[in-house]
Length: 357
Image (cartoon, rainbow, N blue to C red; front, top):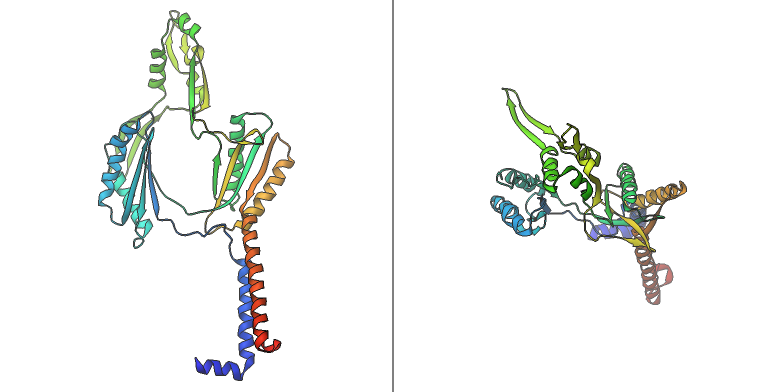
């Protein structure tokens, strides 16, 4: 170290060249580094979600959550398990130890869950995901002149597809409306009396015809083929065509003849308003590999082009986290500059100004 210092003192050119290179590479890194509103670290959280329509929290706990927790007991690398049993859904969160590879443990968890064979018959397949660590990029708002949440949702989904297809944004969350859709079959009382029909008869017809049927397997030495009959539909037009029964003249009586069938949002009081107008919010996040500055520039350009079409909808930027980040960086730059000036001022009191600078 002493020889190095002696060489710098004897040959000032090398020290000056070193300082110059540090400045050049520092400035280059300043303009090329990816920006994020908050530090992004690797996530070590895995979630297991199971949906079971019509089940109470107690049924979810006893029939689903307990089975998942028991299956995870033999998986190595798990630090902590927490679970929530709610109406229609079970959610199990798994925290992985820092000395284990998350992807390896994730694969072990999938194998353990796949071995569970006694889930309730109506339960959907478990969804196992590794939580991605993200940082907030911004919030957008989509509004329309009149309150039509169904039209707002359709347009919001088209905008979401545009964002995800841009290659710049990969994390989009829609907020401000119930996430689930339900099919409403509203039976007309006068039609029930006309055809001497009951609610139970209509319910049984829908349940018997709007289902997926498993037909078994076909095996040979090279492959295994599963046979499934896909008759389940979420389209109101398909449900309207379901035959309830025939009348005395042989005419078919369909669901659409006695009931109004339509898609509606589930009865959950979720709503968002901007300036008194119903809206849908877009939450945009960025991964560690994505740049906040590029995302912000793309969103501003998209909003400008979208509003120029004048199609009855309006898209607005509610909050841009790049502005917050720039404000923080400006404070950092100004404080750094003030600190450098104070250092030079203090040194100039004891040394000549040329040496202190």
